[in-house]
Image 1 (spheres, one colour):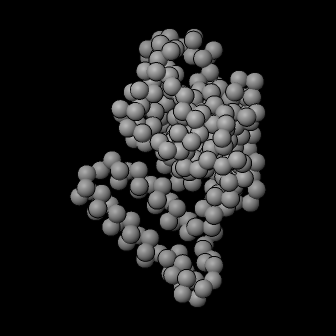
Image 2 (cartoon, one colour):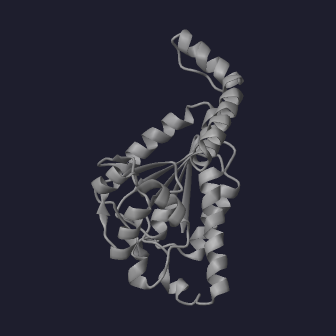
Image 3 (spheres, one colour):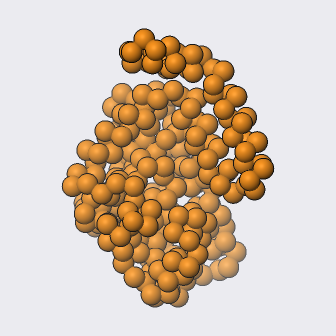
Length: 251
């Protein structure tokens, strides 16, 4: 259900349930969790995409219909939180290539990735109100941080679909291009060429600084600057700049 292809330093993870528009089953989600718990050592960037013209249409409701016990629902929700924390904060940069449905849980997964590339067919929706349920995979935090509580409330109350261009304007996508996978690959290769420590610090620090007060954020920024700017990668990056050559960072 999760196809994994590794090409050099880039792993491409493809959600492969096209008959269900890549609806997220427990089995598929477990495979995502397994990959991000221990990515292959040679992989520097992951691309996450969906097969068959859709990214992910959300939670597989055929499974959820049998999960009506409050404790089971809460444990399931917390499991999503734990896995998507690994996606966002595991240290591996993740680029998502989005097409077709990016709905509900699919949007929760997409907003845990660091760079989001959509093609013109992509659309974004939180239709939980029409299903009599509430988001449980982290959208109230991740999507809410991006578009704001006011816009998110409207999105959930109305079930409104936002197209790719609207999604980019709102911040749900960073790019809209005709070929999302080609652009995602281009960006992944660029990111893979960065200093590994800088990539790691950016992933670990920036979202957390956004949750801090000003004084704590400034202090944390200084710590991150001290760590990166005194590293061997920084010496190589600055030397390469002055010598007008590409840097050769450690593997």
